[in-house]
Image (cartoon, rainbow, N blue to C red; front, top):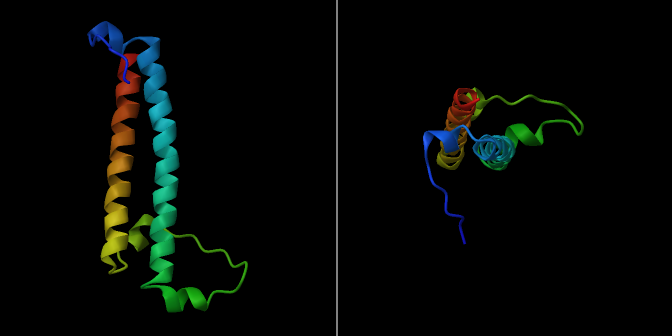
Length: 101
């Protein structure tokens, strides 16, 4: 069960609230990384399958979000949309954290 919290200006500036925002941001960082990986794996298993097959073992390639937004795969698009929302949420929390300190 959840904990009952009295929300007030004082609570938002409390150490508990700041700590929770920091934890949320760290978790969202992990989710961001996971979603980026999911998008790459989906693209290279589908629309970019032939391209992926031609890469040498151990070859390094840097994917960008821009590339992933242009795959033409609706499932990659859905993952990238979710990724964008995670990034936006994380930035809002970072801004909130700066204003509570």
